[in-house]
Structure formats: C-alpha cells, structure tokens
Image (tube, rainbow over all chains, first blue to last red; front, side, top):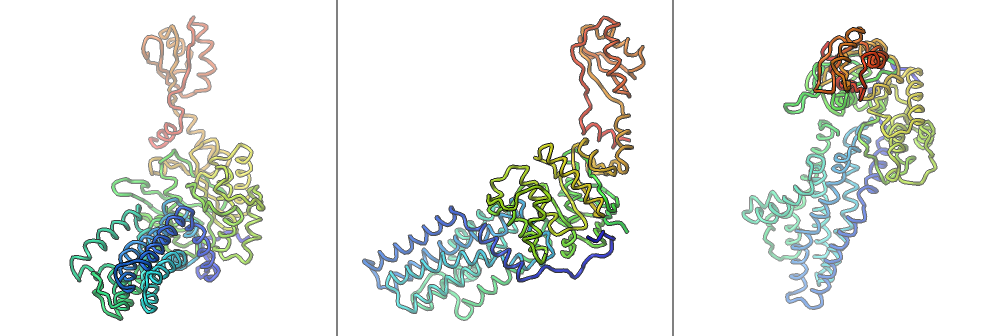
Length: 254
Length: 304
C-alpha cells in the first residue's frame, strides 16, 4: 500500500454509484422487513380485503359508494400512511438510532445515493403492501374499473410522498414513529378537516382528491383539482428527498 | 504536513464542553489516545472522522476536511465505539458491503482477507447478531481494514476481546503502523496503551493533558504523590516509624485505627511498611492506595 503523505487525498474518488446504490437498497430491504412489521401490515391489508368482500356481498350503498368510502377512510387515512410511516421512518431512523449509520456514511459516496436507495427500499415494501390489498378491496366492494385504477393510482402516489416525508422524519428526529402518528391523527385526521387551506397541507387531501375525481363521490378532504392532486405529492416527495440528502450532509452521525 | 492535524479544536454540546482548545498533529505509526471515560476521546475521534464537526478550530486529515469531503473516507478506516452492526448480515456479507461501498473491484475477496486478518471464519453462515461481543468487535475491525486504508481510527477496539485476541489485535495495530499507516487507537486502560506503542496523547476533561513518549509520561505518573490508607492497631507508632524511615512525606490519623500516608515513592513505601510495623509492634490490618485509579492519575497530569 502507499504510505500516507498528508496531501495526496484522492479528492475525485467515488465508489461506483450503481453498485453502491444497489448494495444499500438490498441491505435496506433486508433490514426493513421484519416479521413483526410484515405480519402487522399484511394483517391490516387483509382486513381491508375482508371488509371489501363484506361490502360487496351485502353493503347498503352502490358499489362505487362502498368502495370509495372503504378506500378513503380505511386505506388512505389509515393503512397507507401507517405502513409508509413504519417502513420509511425506520430506513434511516433505525441506523441513526443504533449507531450503524456510520457504516453507510463513512464511505466515499455522494449522500444522495444513501438517501435515494433507502427511500426506494421503503417504497418497494410499502407499495405492494398497500396497493395490492386496497385495489383488491375496492374491486371486491363493487367498484367499477376506473375506480379500481384510481385506487391504485392514489395509493401509489400517496406512498411515494409519505415514504419520502417519513424517511426524512426518521433521519431528523428520535421517536419518529410517535411524531409521524401525531401528524397523521392530529393534522390529517382533525386539523385538515377544519379548512381547505389546512387540508392543502395534508397529503391525505391529495390522495382523496385523486380518488374522488375518479369516483365522482364527494369526500371531505377532496379539495384539490387535477393536475395538482398528483403533481403536489410528487413535489413533496422531491423536497423531502432533497431535505434528507441535506440532513445526511450536515447532521451529526452517532 | 502531518497526516492528522487538530488546531485549537473545541466542541461543545449546548452548555457542555466536550473538547476544549485541543491541538496536536500525528504522523504515521501507532498513536494511543488515552483518557478516562467521558474525557472526550470519542468526540476527538468522531471529529477526525467527520462524524461531528468542531464548534471551533480546524481538523485536517490527509490534508482534507473529513466532515465535508466524502472522498476522504476511501483512505480512512474507522472502528466506532458503538456496538451496533447490521445484525441480519453474516460477517462476510457485512465486510463485503463495506468493501462494495468503498468501491473495491472485488469486495468479496477483500472481505475474506480482512476476516482472516482478524481471525474470523468467512464461511460462517451465522448472522453477526448472534456473535459474541469479541467477535462483533473483530468484525468491526475487519470492515475498517477491508479497503486497505492509510489512516485507521479505532475507538476502544479491545473491548470484549479475550487476552489472546487482545494480544493479536495489538500486534496487528503495530504491524499496520510499521507498514506506514497512521493508526490512532483510543483507550481508557493504561496498561493496554503501554503495549500499543511509545507515542500517546492524554485527554482529560476535554483538554490535552499530555502528549509525547509513553515512558516519559508513565514516569511522570509514577512520580506523583500517592496517598495510602493503612489500617493498624497502633496508628501513632506506625506513623512515627514511617516518617523516621523517610518513606512518608506526611502522615495523618484517620480515626482510631488508620493512618493516611502521603508518599512520592510507592514502591519504597510498600517495601518499608512491613518492617516498620514489626519494629513498632503494630499489626497491619489493611493497606490500600486511595488514588491509584486512572482518574486520579489524569487529574494529577492536568494539575501539572
């Protein structure tokens, strides 16, 4: 090896981006999937399917009404954000808490590689765990095909935004699960209902607007018109990811 | 320019000053960073790795700022103090990951070599979550060495190792230094540090208390006044005898059956106390040093 000279830093050196990204992505997938999380989230998804089937076989309203209410009130208000919170806040939050972040940070890599790979892993898990059961539940509840597609679209767009936001939250704060739940239940659950302006600061308003536009069913928080109903969540995700990269650059690593 | 340079570095967390106006420079070879728990050793190491930024002053490693230049990580290996590892991975997966993220062409082969260096079996299929503390420590050392770094920072690397593994690691660190690497090892165990090498930095209460050759500092430590408590049935007679023998700077009665003795030569005192007790007809019940812990040694160094 070359002895250190004190001045010959390989300033331009970077580890191969693609290989490093894939390594962190695969690592995060393994770390994020635990039996506890998986069973809980699959259970919540299965419950949506069971409720959908029950509504489809004996609900009071039309198939569109039943499916819209199920997806809006159970899927978009509960399952999607909670699943996103559980997986995304752990992606960088757990390594920060247990001190293993140093093994990702102390590498010759741009910080965005770590941020994007971690977010992508959380999204990879969250998407099937939420989109599949909610889409199936909507279909079983009697939703027409365009509403089934809208369910998948709203859930997918919501997952992109929620995972990015909760990923940043996990890196930024301790007890991110608690803070995330407070945001969901206090802000999205109550405050956003108070005014249209407050609703526009809740991701739920955008996912419900997407769903409402497709179903024609009025929903409390469906106050955003297209194309903003899908552009804004994607912008929120982008801003959250930029913030995550910034935090990785300036934050003290335990 | 030295490999590592700290200039007037301070670090505070809120109102707590962790490191205060520390300056030193280090070249290749093994240097030990010695200090009691909570002295600021880990904070210094963390600043050297860029994991935390100094509140004041400058840190340079290989001429760069480790906090803002990720490329420096290619030439630095770190064994952090915290025990956390990616517990689902096997040792070879963990070290291979480190090699991959360091941009090695063949991280698998490098990982196997690094695990051999620390005497771990790369074919072990157990996840590191099931490893003993000593094995986990060796995994940490392997991931720090997998990319053949020029500078290695090790924060209490011997924690949890058995005596044989300690010896092996100390030899390994010496070899790394002999090969031209700059190795900085922190420890709070004086005897451990003695075996790392001759150059040490002593940190106490966030300040650099001493730096230089280990033996000179060790002599300084040994020459400091010692206070010893002797329990006996005839404390007055024993105290007078010790003063007359010239092995005590001062004596003070401590209750009806004990005497506190100040001495600058603990070895001479130990040799003399028995014969003096016999000569004065005193029965020795207990002899215990009151300030032989590292904290008091370090406090003495700070006071000088």
